[in-house]
Length: 112
Image (cartoon, rainbow, N blue to C red; front, side, top):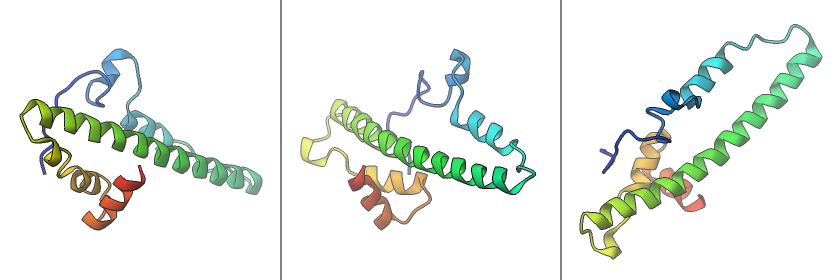
């Protein structure tokens, strides 16, 4: 499914590196280079910290979901889509991006 109105602009994840701000891809690459701790206590600390990463990632996904919905509705409104049809397909795009079923994507969209 195509994202309507997608364009490279600051903050959209495509050119952020040009502005000195790390992208999510940069963060993932850095995280992948973190070695496993050599002792049990350090391993437990890393597990806890990775849980924090997962929690933060989930919160950011919710923020981005809401922002994407607003963006899509503005694009659709500018294209003349009737108000009661604006936002159609957003949940499906969210599901696709999150590698979830359309049904679960709708639930995640609703929770965001």
